[in-house]
Length: 479
Image (cartoon, rainbow, N blue to C red; front, side):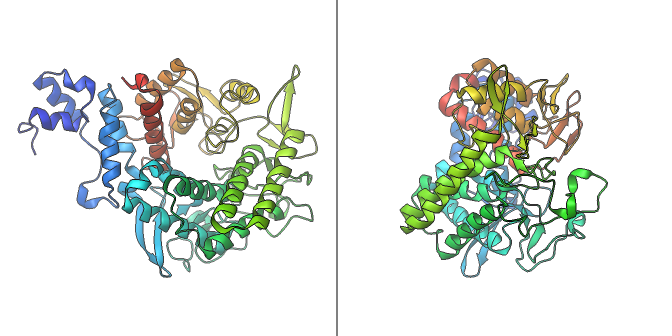
């Protein structure tokens, strides 16, 4: 269809039927339509299609008054389904493999987060349920292969093609793309499984293989409490960047076994300084309690549920005792600790983070300790908080001291109770996509045209999730 042949109805459809478009004269509308033409792949090239998702795009776009924001939502919300999903059958079961985008491997964390926004639609869309069943099966298989790995290959017998991981000094397994031990890698699949079960009522994916994988999760968490030595995991990498490897023979810096779970790497895939990573442990508390609920309801496994709850209680008590920092008598959360009394305050854009604690269900948005932590994370106390000409935001060592991650701006909006703050976040997101219509991994604080990863599906999904959340609960902010 040429621009000259577009009817007014066609143009409105391109703009998502937004309120601003309804008032435009023909030539202005045509110009806007050309500017905001969809950046999605052609229908025949999309990896996965869902009628429920398409209906949701139209429903939400109709509530957005800003045509640029509506266009960005239309590009970003379905991006995971359009470009990263591979459906199939593996070992007689539905299989779903979800790559991150421009890295051809599946991270347990990213793949869970990428499909999270579609959960509310699963009950009314059989194709989505098939996708989730396949991904839950695949997660169980990945955990069975190696509960310490963060990223996996489509072929469970394959050898990693990732150049940076091919010579790592660790117990590399077939099917593993990268083997960095991160607490959250095992939390995210539980979050997704629990969310899918609650959204759909579907019990089909939670078979004996899934149960065995969940037992492996609990055993891994217990081993990494390191009450009886360092456990089996070690990792070293020959790299110019210190955050890519671990000291002391690959077992990491020392920490006391105070009940917290050790994590060698953060969700950014950067090495922890102190091995007791606080946001990851807080996430594990939530995940273990969700797992206990599922064990009782789906399998009648009271003993396993009790074991999950016991560990959750241990970790929660240790967080309260060791992970709270204080100034002027007021407590706030540390980012990493070692149990000896050393505490690091910072925050990183990747989730779990201190900023994201309410998003993950670790506390309420209005929780006083969280609010004190949040104020410090989004300010000068955080060495990775950045304030530039283009935006404010949080970065991390992964991309350097000038690079803001849009995910941090989205998490600020998702955890905010202030309308003005949310509007500011939307403005920053709308003005830093560099004309692409998509979110990126990171952008320069002063020049959004300098960005990393043009195809980073998690960031696109999170942006879509934010807009759906606002359309449901704060629609006035989108008008």
